[in-house]
Image (cartoon, rainbow, N blue to C red):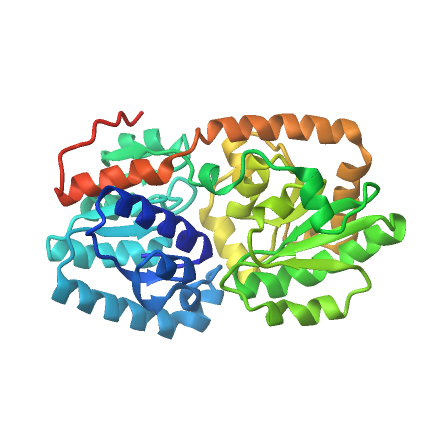
Length: 380
């Protein structure tokens, strides 16, 4: 059950890994294009359910409630051998209760961030989830201390992001000259995020380009976003912005800096060694409510994994064109800052493991389905 773009990607990779071990498995549930391409029968589209923030969820509440009702009905009728939940915590933990009622085993892949906020949910997780497959190194000890059966499988981004790229060839394909600096603009994978963040990113790009005319901008968009949705923002801009729709990782690997919405994308850029500025902006009510319950030193996953502020973070009112331009130019113009940041980003990459998360999770899933004996992998 994948509720958004990144979960759709990681879910599709998990499906493919499970099919490699047992081609006879049949999959159905919630997902997007990538899961459908992997052979999943999706009766609910994940993009219809993607939201961020407490107030923002109200706009899609009816869709989410209908999806929950349909999924519960299907679980009751089909009684699957295993329910695999991917991220999307409130919805998935709720659905896990139905699975438990009908004695369907539950594997949770990509943990809810209960270590960050609303730790009370751990009680529901321990009652409803049979096994956790976590992707951040510190999550294993957290869940184990709470009495939850848990395996650390590594981060799936280590498989998704290319480890070696020919940057000269990529730059040539993107029509970038040697003197061009490249800045990535990553406003998120949800329409609400893009509406809030892309305009301020573009205005900051215009400020930077007035100072350095050799900067070029790349804008990757998630498969869940129609390119026509972002085009009006670009049309009103005075700078050149190239939209990247497919195979976003190789183009982003040539970025000299990036402005990134807080989320999984901060880890993607860390894995590729791209210095960045992390930004976070929600509705005032959502932000106020979040500050009441979230107890973290940092908002970006990259900084959380590092345990220190490796890259700057701008929050709410700090997210202005002038401030964004200042922080990004500070990276582009200062080679010492670039070097130090890249060194620390490499340490983050090392903490995320060596790849193979999908394969490790697939083995756990098949063990739970009792389709075969354990395959002998040692989960550390």
